[in-house]
Amino acid sequence: MYHVNRTKGVEGKVALLDPGGQSVAILDEFLEYLTARACSPNTVTAYAYDLMYLWTFILEKNLSWDTLSTGQAAEFFIYLRGRPSRRGGYGKGVRVVSDLGRLVPPQLSAATVNRIMVGVATFYDWAVLSGHFSNRNPISKVDDVVSWRVSERHRPFLDGYRDMYPRHVNCG
Image 1 (cartoon, rainbow, N blue to C red):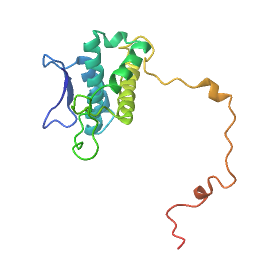
Image 2 (image 1 turned 120 degrees about the horizontal axis):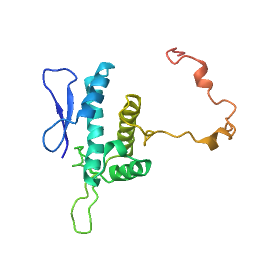
Image 3 (image 1 turned 90 degrees about the vertical axis):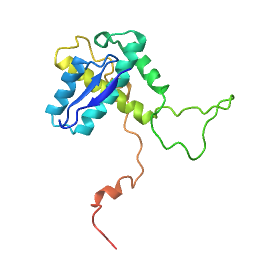
């Protein structure tokens, strides 16, 4: 499996290593780009972990990152929703148990899946801009054209009155 490698002593040097221990060249370029944009080392590491899910999916489905289609991106989303969470802290409280008496591992939360999808979309935006990906971003956000024709929803009379006064003012 793929894993993230952070080089100690070199600030911001993060790499995604393939099952053979070799770094993924295209991701090295992308992570260096993020570092050059002055992203924090934690942000660069988070992108590396997000892309680890994509590369694992690509390996399991025998796909190639540079031919990923929107249909395969939808499959990736479903794949993420079925992935187990690596978070700890599930020892207390109610736990889900199968009919065989085994604990059901917690899955990635919706917020985590959304963050991963944003990270992958950012990678594909960079790949398109840098000339490494010739198609349209398979995970790009599409504007909802129907919402353009819908008038603004009704707002109550006093809606937004709190925003008229600065919050740091103490009126007491």
